[in-house]
Length: 139
Image (cartoon, rainbow, N blue to C red; front, side, top):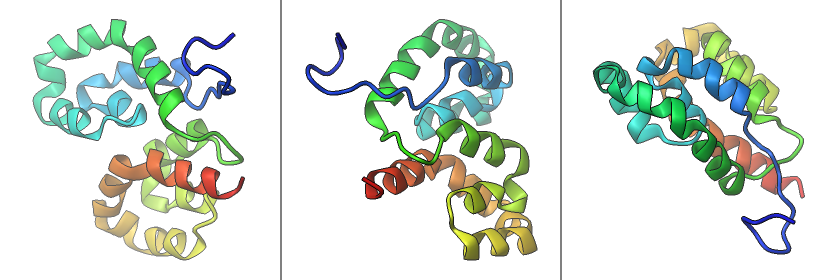
């Protein structure tokens, strides 16, 4: 039985494996963005993981961040892990937007280098919400 939501099915939207892989680069805040914590992700980015201290503490906090993200975001046809991998490594080409079915913005990102990286930064802040909204609309 699911202890988090009585009577509701549990959906594993985010992966601890991806979270720990992004944690390796945690001084950039990437794992925090992945788990839907854009404010602390930005703080980690500008302070190098709170000078490494917050980065080390996050090693133990990732399981809780994963559970929280699983409860917060909608699962569905669009996989968060694939969207995040595409954004993290190919964001300037817009492949994460193409994966979500956002063809026009994907082409714009491709032609402008992710809208001159500002669009990529915006997507780091909002990707979980974008995917969750798309998945909720497909039910």
